[in-house]
Length: 158
Image 1 (cartoon, rainbow, N blue to C red):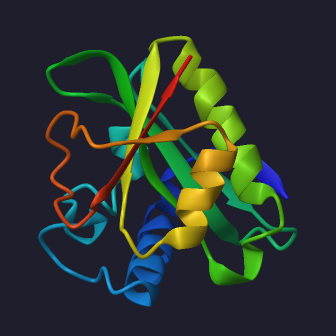
Image 2 (tube, helix red, strand yellow):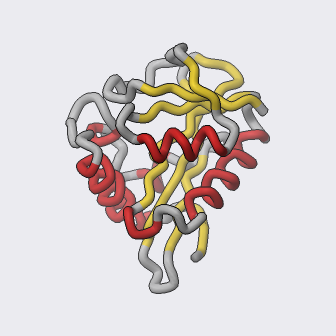
């Protein structure tokens, strides 16, 4: 497996992965999940600032199988958002998601003191994964992510 920063050639594949995963968990809504993100097919253009980044994992055949982003939260100082972390079904449990998250959090520590994320209530494996990595559940909604379909909120302190 190879982990690298997103490139323009990855945009549509990453959007496909996200939509595939959201469909799997009943999150294929246009308005209250990542499905409706207007930048979903343009991440290589969005994640270009000093304090944000998006990484992809590709398999030995060069197929992108997972991705994760770190981005600032509008109007919230010192806290970033873990964004669009998705992995196709065949690669869950392989350790690649953990590697991606570790890279993302190391990057985040350079610019932020905390990292926040939202996920859907029925994504139990994702919730356990985040908790194992040190995130804890919070009842607080931080910022305005536009993901009202995500009822579970987590944060980690650096």
